Amino acid sequence: MTQDEIMKLSRKAGLYTHKDVQPEILAFANLVAAAEREACARLCEAQGEYGDEQCAAAIRARSQA
Image (tube, rainbow, N blue to C red; front, side):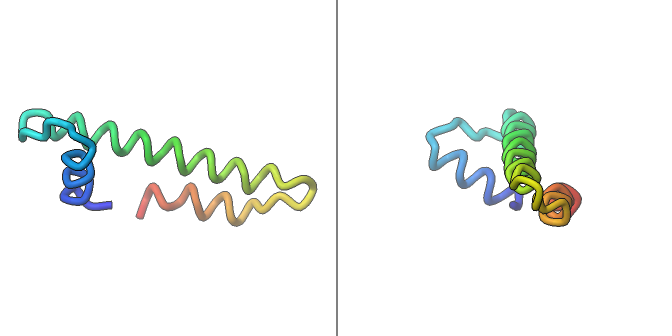
């Protein structure tokens, strides 16, 4: 997600998005995205004996994309 997309969503959520607070909003958005990626990756891994490690790795790799 781009910085502009994050700021647009922030405004849509009713957040104050002045340039002075944008670094904090971006940091928060990145933390939320990382937590969601990890939750999804764990779901892949938790599929019993057939847990999909490749799927989990691909989800985690999105943080570097």
